[in-house]
Length: 417
Image 1: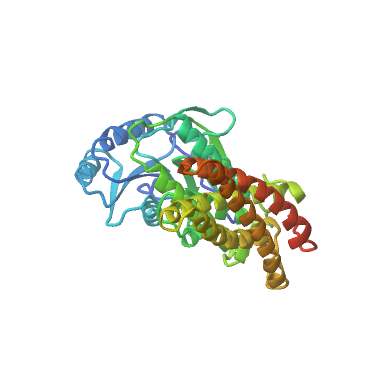
Image 2: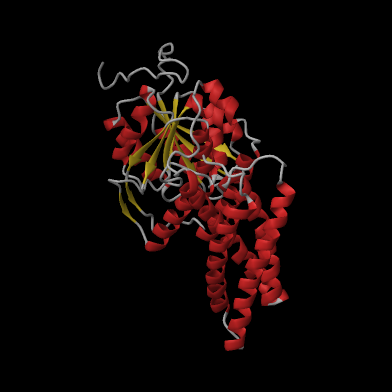
């Protein structure tokens, strides 16, 4: 077997190789999702094409997935498709990176599907280590990681902190075992994609996270490749809007997993996988509960602070604190019941939620009292001062909340997964 003759792609269900592919069908389809990238598209596609044509041992296709660009991106993409072989263009009339990937991957005939961001921030030398385990059948998905041992990353402190906090949140709230959800450098076997994509609801930036969490819960193998990654200083991603959308996605996915509404058991059985331990990287027992509680707490606190800021001006500090705390406390109790302590069904739910109201009162007393003390000392404090006081009070309330949830609210019903 030579470098130009790739090894057979092994199916999920069997170690036997499928029938030989037609010459026109590439082994790998690399998708580049784009929106208004008329300046960067051509140099990036040419650079990727040059690398694949000169250094990549598998047959390939590059698919430009244009999701509703309003500049000259469609024209540039068409010119590239006419100039370079094999480059294809898929045009969508709605925005959303996740939507673009879903459509491109679903339409592809390649047995291995990949994508990379148009800025090519990831060193292309990592592409072969990303693809090879999927071609051989060793793994079902592969991701580039900027947070693994051996990764070399150049980016600003703000993005570094956001990335690490987000992945910590995933480990806590969703028991995720993978290290980097949002690196724009991933691949999946087509047979795994066909099973997972119908379950992935997000059309935007949370698409990656949702796909990975569902794959992990279904027992699929995720291969991680440490990458060299250089931040794009001209990135137009709105960090605040993306972060809030991701938080909403985490909450929605946690609710779906907690309710058991996703057919993951059927998916495991269909793929021939055994039972997969919940989030293998998360400790069991009290340690696992603490980590999951912390992740849910980060999400709840973020939503609480956003609601507080929205309500602060029209309602005043104390009323805004009451309503924001009440809104997030209900979701926090439900999420901790299902995810942190693994309590399912309606048995004991009324008693547990009634007891949780006592914890709400405790949190209200601590946050409201802290605000009152601040206003007594500083008659007209800044909003930043109020937020700092509320964050400190919430930390104290959260510590007491975990102790009482563990020892009182869910006593006798705790999961040890």
